[in-house]
Amino acid sequence: MKNLKFKGQNIPNMPWEDRPEGIKSPVWRYSQNPIIKRNPIDKISRIFNSAVIYDEGRYYGIFRAENHSTLPKLHFGISPDGLNWQIESVPLELIDEAGRKNNLYYGYDPRLAKVEDKFYITFCTDFYGPTIGLIETADFKTFVRRENVYIPFNRNGVLFPRRINGNYQILSRPSDNGHTPFGDIFLSESPDLTYWGRHRHVMERGGTGWWQGLKIGAGPNPIETDIGWLLLYHGVTNTCNGYVYSMGGAVLDINQPSKVLYRSKYYLLTPELDYEVAGFVANVVFPCSALLHQDGRMTIYYGAADTYTALAFSRIDLILDFIIENSERVGSDHEIGK
Image (cartoon, rainbow, N blue to C red; front, side, top):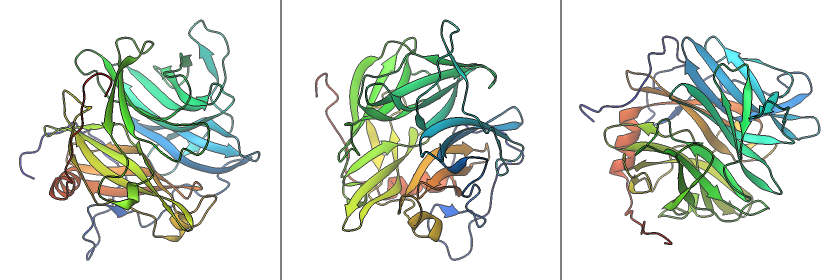
């Protein structure tokens, strides 16, 4: 894809490996996976489905860490290279907007975005059932818990990295109080990160491939290109042996992101190696973060088997070419109430 324009960063030491010879897939795995293994810190058994961002020479992470009670909490970590992490042994200490202590009962599957001069963590939390929580920080030292984005039940809240038409935008998957045997992706917007509305349907489960037939959910924060917003997402199928989570890709309209321009009928990555097919939950590839270098290289952080943190690589042009060349018919009704 020639003359492609996109919003990348100057990341001098971004984790990277060239595509091995003989691999034709647009996405390939890090040879030293997983980068975070079992029992990584005291009293924490597993870290997976976590969020990473690069800013001003340092990598910051918000990690889904499950302690020995298997209760998920959010932990902060820093890294000089995006591979070796110093993760705090205690969960995030939060205050509310009035400055009062307001910690989480649980929090999981975070995403991390910088919008203007603030960092925002979106994640699943408890409010009479699962819903999307929102945490704001300017310095990764003080973490302010803002009002929840939705009432229950909801999962996979993913912010866009800038306002669109003056408003903040978030993707989500409305759910139920169980393991969600259904799910489409929706879009909501807000002028102030407190009041959310103008809900629109974006993309339905199913499509052409069974790999996404049960449910889908937004993955890393969308990446801006001159073709549209690149959305990596997970798709789930239900097999004789249980659920299988794979990674797919789509392109959303740059000014109207509820409109899907392209959606690949084939997955980009599916569980194949030992650390993806065997673990606390078998057969899971769950993307949560993507770093994009200004030269087009992409590093994707994903959870493997609800047990490990792993890396995959691609280039922005390879992924977009694959999605466009293998796009199924897309289109939906975006009118109010549809």
